[in-house]
Each structure stands twice: as structure tokens, then as C-alpha cells.
Picture 1 (cartoon, rainbow over the protein chains, first blue to last red):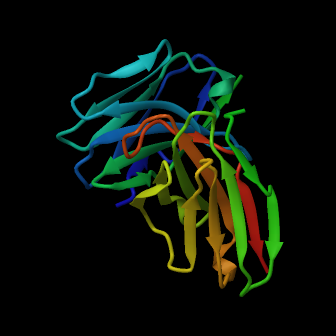
Picture 2 (cartoon, rainbow over the protein chains, first blue to last red):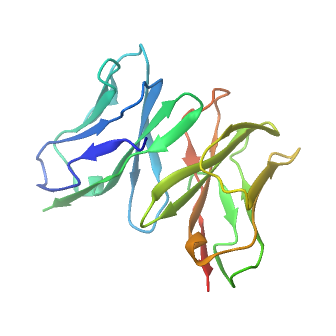
Length: 108
Length: 114
């Protein structure tokens, strides 16, 4: 039931791009993306609804493939501030599951 | 700062005891969610309240209970505590009336059961 994220960890240099994938075995109504820095609370990035459009702003965007129950988060021209653990959250039925997490480290 | 407050920040207690965690949502948010984060189980949804009513229930143990009061603050009660209950407990609030809208997390309460 817990969505599986890939990769588990990624290290980038500033300015590089990354894609984080989230895959669920259940039919999804919505997918959320959060970023959590070490020792802090998760911070909301965006939500994608079933039947909705791809969302994002400037350098962070996401897509939602309802048929495959998958979502991808795209980070372009990464900045040091992007470092953290990224979680997808999936809404299915009346339940909400956070994914396994992807640790992203951006180095100078 | 998300605007969600949680108290206490840290809590150390013994097995078998009972504790209460408190959460105040952002001004205007009617939905409150509780989550447990541990190394072995990750972030797990426990329960959601909307304007005082339970709306959704996740992996919440029978030893745990929650409520949302008329002023919209919420409390999570954990009883008969076990070592495995040691974790970070987050509260989140949402401005949406739907089951799982965008959520704004509080700083968390770190519970240590000894």
C-alpha cells in the first residue's frame, strides 16, 4: 500500500536536473509531493488531482499518470536549497499513504 | 513557519504510561491530520478530523485516540505506551474541505518511551 519511490537516493551538482518517481499499486485520486529537510517538518510542494493538469512552477514540476498510478517530480537546474528528502503522498479510497522517500543531495 | 503549533516539543515517558499531544491548526483551517514518523515505518497517516468530526482513519492503534475541539485544536492521546511508540508525531492542517488537501505540518512532538 505504501507507494514506492525511486531512486532511493540521488546526489546532484548545482544546476543539474533530477526526476523522482512514485508508483502505487492502488488506484489514485490524488498525488501530493512534500520535501522534508533533516530535523524539520515536511513542507508541501504540490498536489495533482485525478483528471487534473501537470503542475509546477519554474523549476519544480510534476506529472500524474492515472492509468499507471504513477507520478514523477521534476527538478530542473537544482539549487543547494533543494536538498532534502522528497516524499510523495497518495490518496486512495479514504486513505493517505506517504511514499518510501527519496534523499536528494545537491552539492556545489 | 507553517502556522501550525504543536506542544510539547519533546516528551520522555515510561512504558505503560499515557500522554497527550496537542496541536493548533493554522488560522482558518478546519482539517487536522495526525502522522507518526519512525525510522522503520516512515511517515504514516493516523487520523483526520474536519471541523470536529472524524473524517478518515489510517493506521491508528486502538491504544491511540484523537479528538478535535470546538476551537479546532486537536489532541492525540497515546495510552499503554510501548517502546515501539517512540517516534516523531506530526500534526498538519489543511484549508480544504476535501479528505486530503494540501497539508501544512507543525514542527512535531518527539516522543521517547523508555
